[in-house]
Length: 526
Image 1 (spheres, rainbow, N blue to C red):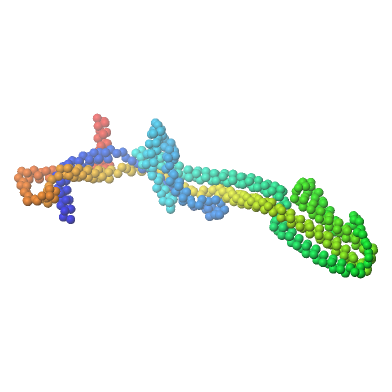
Image 2 (cartoon, helix red, strand yellow; image 1 turned 180 degrees about the vertical axis):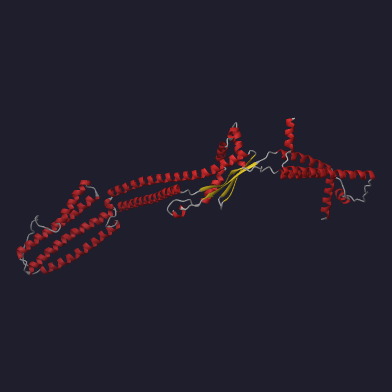
């Protein structure tokens, strides 16, 4: 601690030796700085305040129906941040005719940069109260700049909002039209696909696997029924064996006029076939299926006709009242039933084979149909969503035409106080005096370090690393003491004079006494 104090005392003594340097530099800097501050032109600050109201009566009423901005505060903050953009500043330059003072693009860029440095926008996001200020030596120009910027702030925000809404509405309309066109194309594709693959698609009877399962069940049922009928026929034939009378009855010829239960169905299917042949070819799945069904029914029809003719023959030959006749009639009926059921079983088996052979085609058709249905449903759902949003956008636009969602109210119109707002000559003059003393002190310290002296035996011993045996004090004569006192007095008077000058400068600035301006005008008159 003692060494630090000794070092500090050494620095102070070194500065004191060059105190006149410090005072001279302080005088020079102060006088030059005070003259510069006095010659600085007055600055007038224009300002305006505007309140941005984002509350609307329609907003809570249209919640969930019309399109509304999710965050009005965010939009206002974005508008304030982009207010001082370069395009807006260039617009302010043209509105205030500042561009007339520029001879080339470089000077225009300089004017825009000065506007960007001089304009200040402050506000609170909670209250939405914003103030615009601009400082210039011309009060009329400062007021005009603030007025122009306020106009841009109020107009650009509404214009941008309308522009964004128009762009969104046009986009939605284009998308809705595009989805309607694609939806119509998807409907046509589904219709053509159904026409090409009518026999391989799922209908009211179910899909491919349901039809195959039902056909297999019919085959199993027909086989069981045929087996039961054959067992009944074997039983009847056992009863007829032995005592059966020798009756040779030839099978009667095919009787075309015999009516059966299959006639009406065959006639209906034949009419359906004629209708399909008008629209499709022989290779169409429906035509082929109906032909297969007609072939099976015709076989059943022929079997039924044979059965009826045989029954008639037996009745004529044996009589229906005898036991043998009844058994022969039962045998004929069973044989006819076996023939019909065999034909029906063969038909079912053919259907099963046909379905099993078409498994690859059916699976491909079902996959394509599922994809077409998914695409169609997706387009339909998206079209509905876009249509709903478009209607919400239109409703929002109508609501905004009745009342703006963002309203501006000018609290303080652009104005310029009669008193200049700057520069702060009192503060600047004080800073000039402080800078003069600081520079002088730094120069004095630097001089003391460039030309050092030893004021303490301890310091000398530490530097030379030699023992110091003693010291001899300076003996001052009376003449030297008197000269020294006058020098200290002169230094004190110099410092006091500098402080008095500083006080006079502060008083002139406080009273707004323009001494330099008066002198300049007097010199100009003379």
